[in-house]
Image: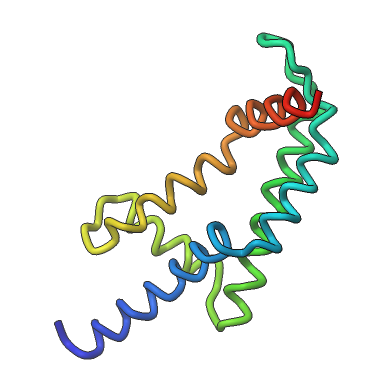
Length: 130
């Protein structure tokens, strides 16, 4: 590898590592998410097979925006962009072996923004509060 490609690889790792830290180590953000979910979980029916309300979609969109705004804020603070982050994750998703470890981050993000998974989580949270 050339020094330039090593430097580029280090910069790419920084973008991905930054987001990993937010998701897995930022206690303040995680506490804020937990509070946010707790405040809204009562809207979610507990009954299995209950129809999804339009409200669920709106709450899910708000949840995704919370993640997006936090990630954007952290990346831009360090001179990175969300587009840059998604490009790196796309390489991981496409099987680029140099990004093998980041594939897990991609799976976590997908699970986080997956609507069905979100509804199951919110229903579970509501059930646990009874």
